[in-house]
Image (cartoon, rainbow, N blue to C red; front, side, top):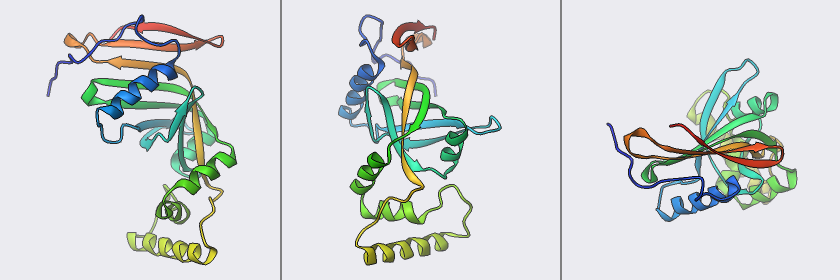
Length: 207
């Protein structure tokens, strides 16, 4: 299961001045390569007792301010972020021999932004967000189906679905971002952006 990495290289002179500009380049290259769900990212949180937890979520948009994803605020990750907003996120694009690591702070999006995105979702996804008590223990799959059906009937009566208060978006505002490019002999290129005094410092890390 050993593999040599030979697809590319990364150096301080070739990267952009800010991490989100560099991420834009790599993200578009991942999409152009036809990778399945190139926007899948592993988000890691820590609870009040210091226990870590990680899961895969989908990046929905990003800009110079950070990465945006949506979830149930009462889910495991939502409860973690309520007590400790520090978060890490990881993108792994194996076909390109690349990964990107973000470290930062998660902030809730304004309600209006969550409302706008919620209304853009397919109806079934909207109903699922209402029906599912994410991360909670439930009696059975049949129970979940019944809850979905009840929420579906309510949506038909109401003529639509409003975003529930327990569901919305977060923005991960990074203060450290690392770009990793696989290289031969395990001498991988690792370029780190570190926020220092409002400016991004660019550094090379040992593999």
